[in-house]
Image 1: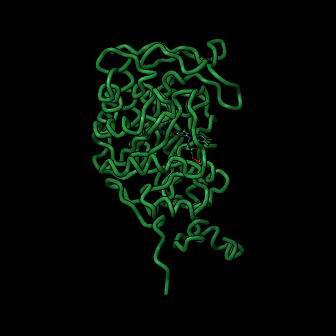
Image 2 (image 1 turned 180 degrees about the horizontal axis):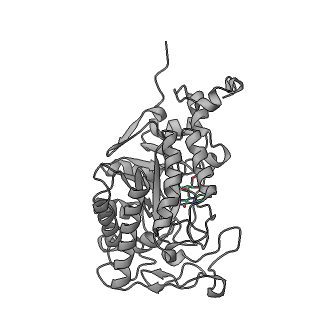
Image 3 (image 1 turned 120 degrees about the vertical axis):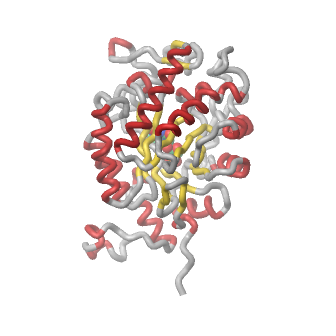
Length: 360
Ligand SMILES: Cc1cc2nc3c(=O)[nH]c(=O)nc-3n(C[C@H](O)[C@H](O)[C@H](O)COP(=O)(O)O)c2cc1C
């Protein structure tokens, strides 16, 4: 008698896209681009997860404009050359029958930063840094303060996300994600500590959610109706005066056109105290999942197949995103399938090498 397929390996349909299982690669910055171009690194890095049969692969935060890059080395999707570069990555992943989504991002006041291996804080102008923008002229920690966006600046942000989404469709991506988490531009608007505006983009939760609402609507309007749109949010900022889970739920009720919410937390306030432990964000996804009518995903120190399976079985989430463990083991999904009794198959190139059998 065969065991029932584990819940982690049940397919899931998000809008018009059916994913074969629920163990997905979370977005991970690589700081490996010149002028925003996807290159061989992205092909091999993301391609390896496709060889490993991940359920869905997310690109790293992909800048919709040069000034929206977190660091000068961030990858982008703001010109047609980028579209061509991404198509090469997407085609390889599709050749492995795997789906890939792009995380559309603008770093706002946290842009023009050093990549972690190069330094800390803001890159100065003489080292190719740039003037950053934000909801208000309030700095993130010791970063250089941003310029507050005016109406034209806000219109440009929306137009840049829209153009990025169009290019994502042209490049063949299966899904687009709007990055509103981790204290980047949309997260800065959502937060009362970074958004001090007195116009229609600042004030109560509804008004602070306006830019995210408008970006999501603009992106939704240029992608196929059946293409999933994911919104990544920081459910809480882990500071007493910042965004709370209740605020996030209120904001989500206010934003139409999202097919799945990717639940994360923090990133907008250096005072944050994150209670890091295995599965530390699952209480957040559980609460949000109970309050909204669409599926959710969660990441956060989920490293073992059993943990991922338990997160779904407990009703904490519909899908599991994994970041660091996929770096340690790009074959994680295949290993998880073997461990939990799923039916994922190794690529024929590896399967044919009989020595793999019995080792997974
Ligand atoms: C190297 C690295 C880069 C990351 N870059 C991004 C990113 O570009 N966008 C994003 O939303 N989250 C990013 N994250 C956060 C991850 O997506 C994930 O939420 C977090 O690492 C927790 O998952 P984990 O415990 O499985 O690593 C990054 C994490 C790591 C480790």
